Length: 448
Image: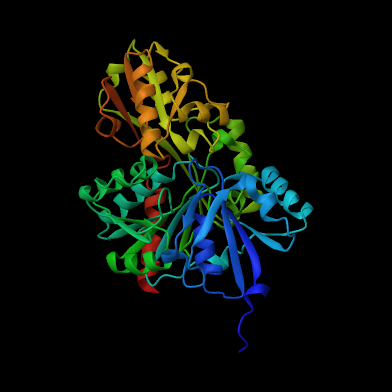
């Protein structure tokens, strides 16, 4: 074999958002000396640029690591016209995706969408994946529902979460969260805590990190089966034995208009049409028509999210500020979530608009997502942004905070205002459909 000429290495830029991009690099490029990944770009998630993908993760071909820069720097990265661009993030409209592709092609470079099959890792234990067609369809409640169901059947499920690779990446190849003490580390963002805390309460261990082959090696030892808990509307990193995909009829039509959500719709074995109690018949019919056209052989299950409060009477007649899950109401495009539903259902006299007192980075959030008005996104990607959230909540002129983030904000922020916590759980619209389907799948796995 002839040695690789470093001056002739193919140059690649990976467009990402702190998750899928790193996985694609690890699986497709890390081991290939003939290719040089010159940079990752960052979009969607704040504070992700001006970091480095460190040498301990990038491998011996990258002794200085790989820079992570803002996606706005893409034209300068492509100035030599010999760079391939690999698109590697999710929950982007087809229009936006093709606009980026057109920009890249106009600059004289190649634009690549990696194969889903090439980026999935094979497990030695059964894998049940839970993905969606958009952010905010209800993956997390469904994962909890499935964990409870499987535990009741004597199984030991382990959840592997789609990466949330924020902040410094050193030492984050493999992370296991299996006890409350694991959440005491300061490195966890609010967005990560939202995913971990409810599963810990069920006694379920969660794995995440950056190197998903190493994560898979550990997760296979820890349980009878793996539940892949997807992020945004991304496709699974592990090859699933059963592929469950959620749809949201409140955003009817999005299931065919976003990447890679339509890929998930087409691939699914089971399609869960969630929030059916809130959607109109016209919205439900539109989603059903798209299912019939793109994946008519999938099992279709209807579900809803039950909104639960310990003290619903506390909202009656109160002026409240509503805190919603951050990703759902920002790049997920929702104007509100379970917090607003609870405020309206349980008699709040007014939902106070928090925009006028938004502090620091939260002002930029409202500028970036102008569809938001009466809700406050639970943003906490950095320590400073958590402080911005605390200061904003303290400034809002209200009687009560209605919090629909799964994280205990009072414990995290030590607020002076009273908080009512909103929980939401997945409920089958037609009882036992999912239960029977999962039992049949388990029987099939045991027989194979």
